[in-house]
Image 1 (tube, rainbow, N blue to C red):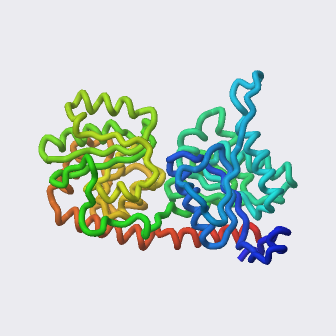
Image 2: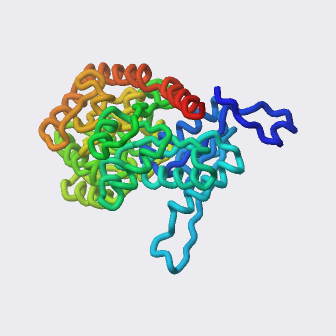
Image 3: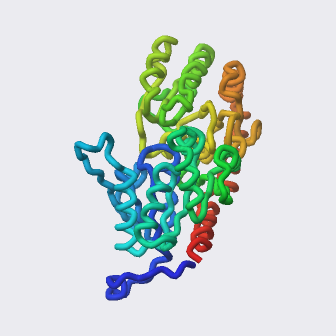
Length: 391
């Protein structure tokens, strides 16, 4: 293990040395990168690491007191000359402060822009090379944001300046090489799920206020951005609802929510579609579903699909991107081209009509989540990477 530095207070009080001290930089919102970063930090803390979250707000899954976990808020200055608050610079300064004050062994940034840039600046301010930087690429930081002409060069630079780089899927690794041709090996470490937290409902289908036990529940959760294609979810459900007594539960929020509400109204299913907004405890909601839909334009991984699989819920996911590394089509779930509306409806109908099929696929999904993407196995790989980078 990394030989962690002990502060004077720890020595005076006779407290045991921690396994290591890591700063985690992430977006605190409900997107996949922030959730994975938070869950990784919590898992590391339970293993004896001292974890310092550095971001502009409390991460959405970081609630209540957690031993070995600390939160450092990044505050930006609102000065008239600034058209936009300089968050990248404020973050770099905060990383420097936390690293020097708490003796960080390394900083792990999730999402390349602007976090990897800020970590590079922080390292230069401390002492070049003195603060190892691990960068994890999650998806749109490469396929969307990083590809914008104004960000392409700085994205490539920040990746190449990181001591280690990981991607959440082989698809994203290949995409990064293709789009940026970085002179840096990229290691694939997939997203993970805690199977003890995300599990099938015990004692049958749980009750929920607005759900009828005699009807099927279709669910979708996302940040409601255009790439998630929430419109396909609503259109698919509208066709299913004409044949199968069912309700649609939509979890999350974002720019496409209003359009989704209007579409449900225009298709005459608004009374059967429930918008729950952002929810913190997905482990209580996912077991309610009989079917989970994720028809995105593409997914670099699809964390929420993995969480649904761990809950034993059949998933129909996009066939574009990294979901084919997660879902075994026809065995532990289904992969469908999001533009093939007929196939989407037909597959969903099969799952909802055939209880034996749904049970078989749900059980296979649970097995795959536990055997291939469990928290314990994946966090082991991050710990090994940390030991390697610290040397």
